[in-house]
Image 1 (cartoon, helix red, strand yellow):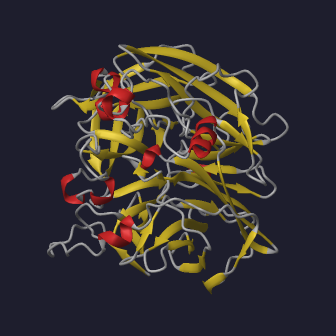
Image 2 (cartoon, rainbow, N blue to C red):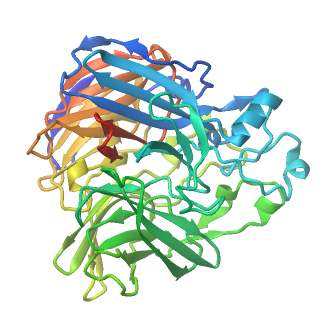
Length: 507
């Protein structure tokens, strides 16, 4: 495991061969068989910073196979929450499956009973799957703290509430009546640092169709009012909306509607999952949809619509305002990456799927023009800025990247990127380690943007288990590695909640 700085200049040296063994990467796809409670974990090397006090929560698929049948895509796996608690007594690990209705029914039956959105069929072929449009809420995408609830999120339906300490499932949450049963609720909220006073969780839900409706919601995120809805609006747009993420500024919620179509017929006939029926329109451009926030300077105005660059976006890094412009940093793919019905996700050819590259779009609201700049040539995903800079211009960002400087590979390294100079500092887990989403935790009382730590779960192919890696955020120097007594499959999103449980920082 190494760390090295580099300049923004492109290398003229030949791109090296892939530094990983596919068997190491694929070994992370497995069922989790243990549920641990407050299991003490010690550093295998280095020292855990004494100032780290709080909980790192992670969510991701924990069950990928039943009765000999594997999910077609890991995103169809049942959600499992992992919690790593830091305090004066050390580090303690807990993990629990989210006891969704579907998880409980399939545990009892010992087989799949529901189709997966990303292509997992029920046993029995197309006839058994045709016209079965039930959705299993798998609660596997994100986990955040809001008020006295820990929320396991899956964007196609309502969140599940869990006890933030024991991780026991309390049940579906409609957030004190804010949501209707089954209403879509994003799995990618943004926690802003106080653009309009107290901290807020800003999030959305989408009702997709020939015309799509976005419901924009803002909740108090700290103090005695945490969890209270304080802003709520709905806006309709033309076209089918496929939106996983968005970005915010003090005045705007920024969405990028990808140029994508949805043909439901193969889904209705039981031949594909719903997500497999999405297809990019060749040569077409998407749109930026800018919705005014209710407490911002443009409250009450109509949304702004601007043409987006070519490409497909799952995740945004951040957005901010610069005079009459809104600047949005996003991870662009040349096309919608998917796994076809006849492909095995464990054998995916990374050279044949598009790579994610960080690009900056400058949206001039006066002229309606959009200009784009490439920020890095390195394959990346799961990027974040310091929690205090969400919605504001930030100097630094942290992200998961490929080991190679160019070319598409699994994510094996973590990178700190200076967004002003282009300088990069990279910590590598290669050749046998594979990283997940990094979470940047500011040092208590920090004034510098990069003063703190980066926490990341790493799949260790040599141990066939997971490690927690703690890096110094400024230098990316390794502080500690904790070898966990648990094998956690490649996951999705997570968050840090400082002690006392008040300061969520959602990646």
